Length: 181
Image (cartoon, rainbow, N blue to C red; front, side, top):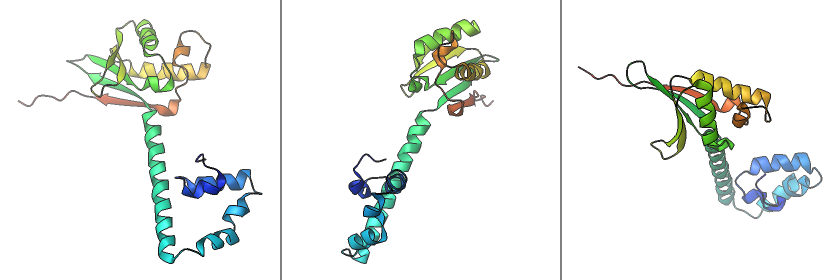
């Protein structure tokens, strides 16, 4: 799991997952490293304070690795944002499609053809590329992404959008703040 050989997994950031993997895949090797005798022989040379410190460090490493995995999963979320402009005008902004290997220019062209509206690739305030579509088409974009995954790659048009799981699509709304008189 961590990429280290089994004898060095205790120094990695995912000790418990490595231990579980070793027990499931190599039950013949597992007792050499994690049986009562093996643990007692290694711990017997350490003081109680050193044992506690080692356990705390291992817990910190695992928590850090879990936080990093959660952050990576969050980065892999497609955000479809409906942004209010003036009066009854809206635009739809789509972020992080490129994280799933989708060519943004081709996707923007597909959206422009499908919705008969202007669509372009531009940089947002964070410096990331996004697709901006004129009009409130956020629900239709979600439907297109679901349709692309249902049909899979190789189908016409929508196949450009294949590969984005429905669980990773987040729909949000930004309203323009009204001026106080």
